[in-house]
Length: 276
Image (cartoon, rainbow, N blue to C red; front, top):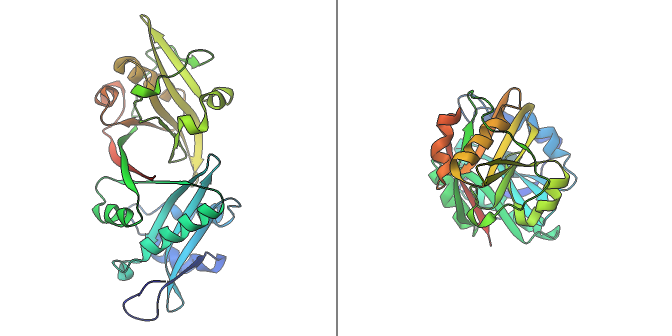
């Protein structure tokens, strides 16, 4: 519990179906284009392994978030929203604490989330949860381009994650998951690990089709390899997907500078936070 300012103390509880209408009244206007949360509300409400939480003041739901439990023992926090009239009162922090507490009960001992590099208020709130910045990365949307290098499911070779182009992570429906924790062998079995070879060099990436909030899209996560070959691998994989495709790449890698020339737009800069 934390003081709400005006009215009774704010409480955080599991979300209920009847919370939707009042929450979506302001959530649907998060950005000029709207918000993805209304389209995933039912999925999150029915999430058997995770949990959606609501913050209420004077019995009114004014905030929400979702905990996604990842099988490798990670609590992934997402979708935190607070009514504009109730921001600055610690509600987002209370929602985060409740989500972490629930994740610990499920066996999680690591906690992660992403936020926009431009969202300074969110970064301050995340720090209050004890999460620290782990990685700066870009999300690049494919704008065109074509397959410039042959790529195929990786049946041999091992990605050298010490020089990872995404800090040793890969994207899974807007969550970043650790390749080491998830397992290279598992990604290989699932057909999500791809490789390209040229002039004795080798590059690896994780790629698959995903759906989230009613949108279907491709996602490509650059793992390792010579920057130009890795960027060509991303372009070739993006060409396989119809509709949207996004490439995830650390902004500190050489590949990030090359992706716009390979048919990708300028990136949205994002930050990965985690604990421990």
